[in-house]
Image (cartoon, rainbow, N blue to C red; front, side, top):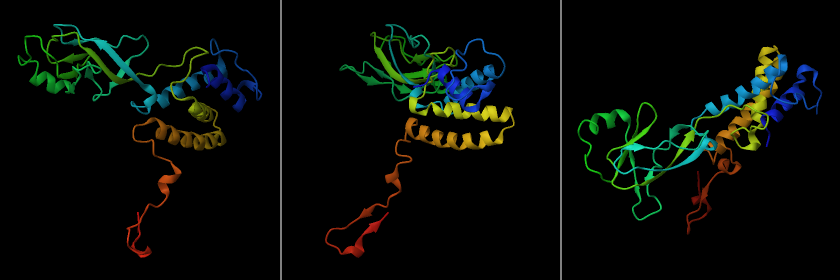
Length: 248
């Protein structure tokens, strides 16, 4: 697992930025760098963020939500863990009292529909069990009726990526893919320094790693790039001779 500083050092030593030799620990910190070393720090920071922004639903950006609704209120408490900002909700994951006999899923409605059909006098005025949830323009959540009990609301969401900042910061993605950050940063170096040989080599490695990262960290991608998926499937029909095999 590579820290922010280690990724910068890998980039600097591999490309010889600022005269660094292979195996050197240059720079000793990401803080206060200038010139080409500042560029290297910035390229690594931008590269990691760019990859995180490719998809909002990277699995490594997924987190769990658990808060308690207040009796008599339709407002849903914001996720309370510092540094974890909600970017996108997993709309099918929201449940009331999921671990109890009162467990019930909440149906998601887009704000425009919720505003048009529930808000204008249609919402119950007495406390009851919510069944519908929505997200307002400001990002806050709202249920369709004031709560009759202090329900535990659980769910999942994808967080907003946090920029690498200090030496020990770790990229959000799994450790085995950290090399892709160096590859994209090296492409940025190649573009700035008009070094097409760097770009060509790093682009090939970047695309290979991105393909693997997609397969590993996007829903439905877990069977991509498996050797077995390209093998023919043979179905034999019992009681028939070999000519009756079907190949898919």
